[in-house]
Amino acid sequence: MTKIIIASDHGGFKLKNIIINYLKDNNIDIDDLGCYNEDSCDYPIYAEKVAKKVLESGDRGILVCGTGIGMSIAANRFKGIRASHCTDTFSARMARMHNNSNILCLGERITGSGLALDIVNIWLNTEFEGGRHQKRIEML
Ligand code: RB5
Image (cartoon, rainbow, N blue to C red; front, side):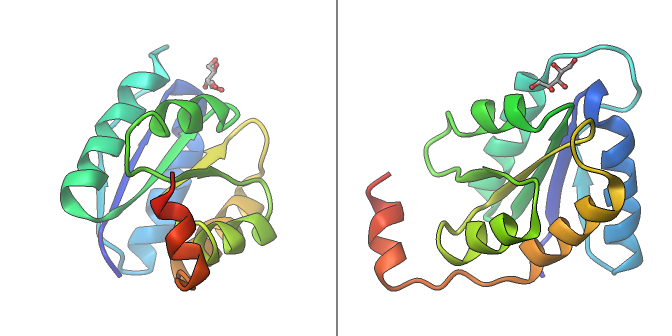
């Protein structure tokens, strides 16, 4: 397992910390790029930090905001990023198998922590299928 680059805004701060603890408990290295408290802040700043680090390192990333929507919109502005906003485990599996998702986006105000950790687990452990899907992601 590669390192996970992770960040949130204030709206995703609590869920980010739950995910960090889960990853650490499973011996997965993390790089926490903020935010570091619940003061109001701007999600595009954190999406950019994670997107750039994922692109330069080849690691995968997780972004959490209130809904997961702002983070996914912002991260997908970077060529080479395939950020998937997932609210269910089927989408998390398909995001890896078909889309080779390299950033998972979650919404703390949408998805409870139990489901969020299931989504994280499936997204982390599902491989890209390649084949016909490789051609399609190259078209993005
Ligand atoms: C912050 O209030 C909220 O707008 C943000 O966390 C996110 O949900 C944006 O998409």
